[in-house]
Structure formats: C-alpha cells, structure tokens
Image 1 (tube, rainbow, N blue to C red):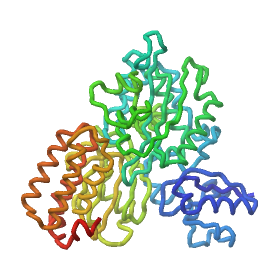
Image 2: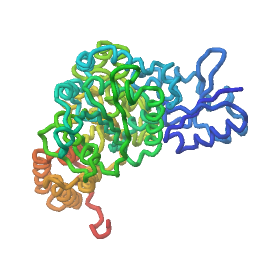
Image 3: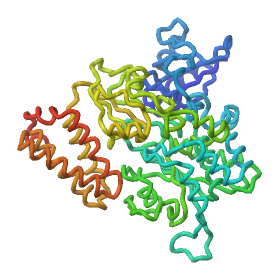
Length: 522
C-alpha cells in the first residue's frame, strides 16, 4: 500500500486537492492530508515516500484524472523529483514554516516527532523572566507590520499586575491575556492562514509560552471570517491540545493554567489594528482606541494584554527550542531572524518564501518568483499590503528589512509583495488606495474618514487633466494632513502608496486624459 501526502490547505483545495485525495483513497492507498509547501503555482502538489531514498518525491498540478489514468509516474512531465531538493524550497531558511506541508496539521504525534512541544518544555523549565529575556535576546519583532520588539512588549505585560475586568468589583478574579491577531487583511498576504492551516499547534505552543512568560491565564485567536478552513483547523487543534495536556490546567504537569479560544471577526480591515481588534472581541464596533493607555497595560477588558501577530507568536517555539542566539544570528542590523515573504499579483511563481532578512526584493521577484506571469517587464512592486509603497523596477535592489525599506521610502508590513507589469496604470492604483481607505475607515477620525474621499476626488481631477499642477499640490497637502493627523495607520499610511505612485510614475497621472466622465464610470 502506498502512502500519499496531499495538501488540505485552502489554496490547494480551491484547485481540486480534495478530489485528488478522494481518488487516491478509492484505489486503496493511504492519504495523509498536510498543509501546503508554499509553491502555490504547483498546487495540488502531491507527494509520496520513495522507499529507496527515504525522501518524498512529488508531482505538481495533479488532478483526479491523473490518478484515474495512473499518470503519477516518475516518467510523467509533472514529476518534480525529491521535493526538498526543488530549488525554490532548497534555497529557503525555514524556521517558522519547517513543518508546514510536511506534517498532518492535527496529529499531535506527528507534531512532536518533528520537534513540536520542545520549545514549551524548555520554557517551563525556565523562570518566566528568563523566558522573556530569551525572547528579547532573539531580536524577534512584530511580524504584523509594526516591527515592535516582541520581548519588550512581553516584559511590559509581565511587569504589570493582573486586573479584574473593567467594571468588575475589585474582588473579582484578575486576568492577563494573550491575544493573537489573525485578521490577515492585507492584499497579497496569506502566511497567517497557511500557518494556521498547516501547523496550528505551533501557534498554540507559542501562546502557551507567552502565557508562562507574562502570567496570563486566557488566550484568544481573532481570525477573520473569510478563513473558514483556518477557523476549523485551529478549533480542532485547540480541542486536541486540551486532550494532550498542552492547554488547560497544570500544563505538562507544571503550575501553568492557560486556555485558548477562537473569536471570529466580521470582515473589518481596520480590526487588523490591535486596539480595534480588542474592541471587536469585547463585542463592540471595531474602532481604534486612542493611546495611551497601551494594550500591554490596559488591553482586553482593561487587563494587561500581549497582542501579537500569528507569525510573531508562532516564531517563539523554535526560538526557545533552538536558541535565541542562533535566531538572532540571521538577518541584517535590527531586522533579525527570518521573514515569511509572500509573492502575489502578476507573478509566475507565487507562494511562500521564508528567508533571513536581507534578501533583496529583486531576488524575491525574479529569482524565486520568476518575474511576471505575463512575461512582460515588471513596472512596480507593492511591498507591505495596500498601505505599502510602490517600488519601481529599477529600485528593487533594496534589502528586505525594517530599517532598509524605511530608508527607501517603503515599509515591510506583513511581508507581502504584489507584482505589476508594465500595463498597470499607477494613477488608478493611487485612486484605489484612497477608495480602499474610504471603504475600510472606522470613521473615528476626520483625516482618514474625509481625507480619503477627497483624495480619490482629487486624483480623478488630475487624471482628467483638470488643473493638474494645483491639484497635485492639493493632493500632497492632503496626504500630509492624513499622515500627521490620523489616529491609526489606516489613514496615516494610505498616503504612502499614493505618494510613491505619484513620485515614481508621474506620467500616469497626466496621460489619462481619456478617463471617462464620472457618470460613465459609475
């Protein structure tokens, strides 16, 4: 009997992985469902163990018809050879995604056989303060976009006293929380989803280590409603983790008591901001809170709260198991460790690339991504989601790191790169940025709520050739007000893609005189 490995990742399922798995089972073979290796242009990527070498060999773009016609042979044109030796994978530095695509995501024995729970056991053998300092020493920074040092945030929560919920009597139980923001809404990003679907115990292990470090007793994973597979997988993993003694009371026979629940978001982009997420979890409208106080001191229900992104929290187990110094030795400057880059848009080979900080955008787009899918020249790459800057093709040699991208006028964000070829209209992209802000603004502050609407109107006037010089000046003034006056990054960063498009591609704003009238567009 042959054992096959077939992804259960959403991307693979969307192109027929379930049908492939069913066909393999129908012919009497064993099928293990895994996450995705991250080579999305090859999905469904099906693997089997080569007994002669002990390594997995694979086939790309497999359909149920391939199975029915016995086309999965090594002579097949879709045969890839040893999967781990595919250049796209072999050149990566997989710390965080080491198990994704390899293990059955909800098999606790498979997880432990591939190093799982080692970080938690090491942490429970240490004092909470030592765990915090270990994370500080690793140089781990927030992977959700802000880049704030995770260990410093943990230290702040650890030093804050637990508190009853706001409004509760002072004698009510006191709490601290660990909240994971999985409201992954940036364009071209999907690493959070893939991690939750492919290695959910890793995220739970990281949260439990954080709970031990800061003294938290409750954890919440806030997942966007558009991720039903991730929601189901995380919930199943939580149930199994309780059975294994990895969550609940006296975790792994220690004094730690900590449990986790999933909360589902309702489609608001702004809930990717930590305080808006906390408002949503509390049952309120997702609107940004003014700071101070910071969530580390007064977070969920007024209690001290660790808020980290999925990739940040899931990085912790390997850091604790393999050593902070080994992790800190990767990267450049203050951008230490690895980053999971996501290649999307007009790209020949879209998917996940985990590399140490310092790789260039050019290498990611051309060496890993293979250039554009259309075969036309690259015109621009947007890095960091819909609020990130557009870098032109001749400026892609910038090193991927927090500071280096900032110096180049951009930002790392969640590590997504969206590629555009030379047919894109950058004025239209700038207009989209303002429209997106207007649609997704929580409405709490005027620069974001009104500025985005006016920004879209001004760009329309420029594209029609109406007093272009004065409207460009007006647009720049408006962007300055939004940057300086908005309450959060939603309005504060929307000018970044607008101004980068205007600065790098000015002709696109003046060569669109044939833009149809507003009534025709609507």
